Length: 116
Image (cartoon, rainbow, N blue to C red; front, side, top):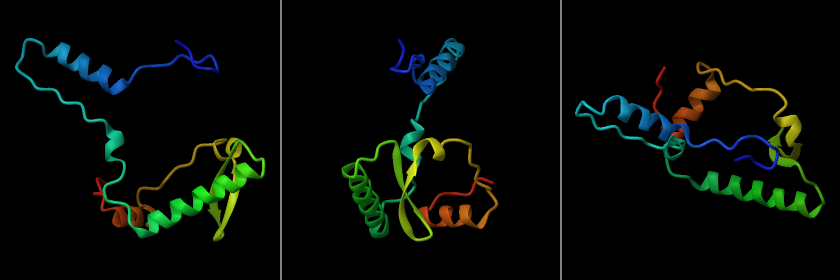
């Protein structure tokens, strides 16, 4: 099966790996569990600041759509809500330094463990 752009649609790799491991250990008593990592992205509940940010981003996205923009996302730049062209946003990979202050603030504010 292919998507609208002609790329193949692949199945969930996590389930595939789980089944391969189960097959490998079929003669050994083993219990293999698959936990979908998308459920572990955020380690704490959203708070009031999250709700406000999401509301403002959503409102600005709707304003952009009503203004006729497409192919954009909404972000914050210098404390201003701005429209960012998606092709520009995804044009190059971005990396997070796991030793940076920004990353440690993210871990602290979301209650996530530091595995480093």
